[in-house]
View 1 (cartoon, protein in one colour):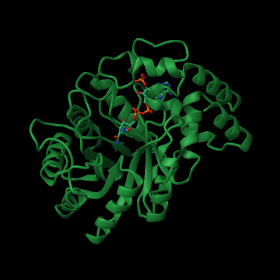
View 2 (cartoon, rainbow, N blue to C red):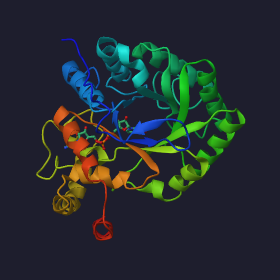
View 3 (tube, rainbow, N blue to C red):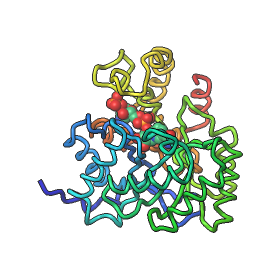
View 4 (tube, rainbow, N blue to C red):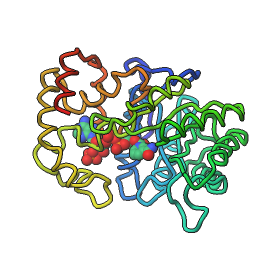
Length: 327
Ligand SMILES: NC(=O)c1ccc[n+]([C@@H]2O[C@H](COP(=O)([O-])OP(=O)(O)OC[C@H]3O[C@@H](n4cnc5c(N)ncnc54)[C@H](OP(=O)(O)O)[C@@H]3O)[C@@H](O)[C@H]2O)c1
């Protein structure tokens, strides 16, 4: 069936300026790490992307290795773009990354220019695009001089294959250095993509300060701790959940270790009139330095529910103190 997007799509989501750049991101971004591979159902993938776009979530986050198999999430998204969104390219912000293993041999992993540029070319082919909006170095590679990885990002922009560049999972010091090198090459580092949730808080120990000082945005990935910070696991491990899937990255042991804490957090969420997932999203967005919360979903109802988090983003001091105590 032909897709015709909701004409009111920009009415209910809010957008935050990405650092000191000219670009604004929706406060929720859809990530395609899980649930968009060749192993997943195409019509569900299509419904998720359509629902997101209909609600003004116009930023989609990919990487070369998302699947399984690696590369297949970009192919799925490329197919959806071609079928449904080809007339809306200029309304979309599409990101991809390179940094983790993609193919055998010394040029299929890491931060070398050889790998990064070849990987971006492959991503563009899978996506069916001439350029991506953001190209990221997916991780800091201590075996490659940072200058070389940054030069690869610079070259991607020079060649018109990426509009902006970003880094992901870089420690604060290497972030500062990467920004400095890019500035010397006359390009801006737009954004840092970092893991951040109630359970993973390393960005609070210096990274957010660096990003603010250098004018970068921050996109917080896995804000629901891969689904832990939802009602998914309050009563065991459902068969269709990430923790139960062979290719899922969430371990059963992690679920078991957290279940008591989850139940206590859930009580606070209920008192706020929210689900645990909604509270967890509001919590990462409470810091204005976080430009967008980068979520995953396996079904449209989850996206619909997560969207409602935007109705109640504020916390009072008592709630914050109680959450600190539980965490
Ligand atoms: N830069 C990096 O190194 C890096 C690493 C990891 C991820 N990322 C990016 O971040 C994105 C998000 O990561 P993530 O998928 O781990 O994020 P997440 O939002 O923490 O977890 C997503 C999972 O939570 C569950 N969920 C979501 N909403 C729910 C709801 N309302 N109720 C119940 N369960 C709900 C779903 O689990 P079920 O599937 O079990 O239903 C979903 O797959 C990725 O797609 C990727 O773009 C980047």
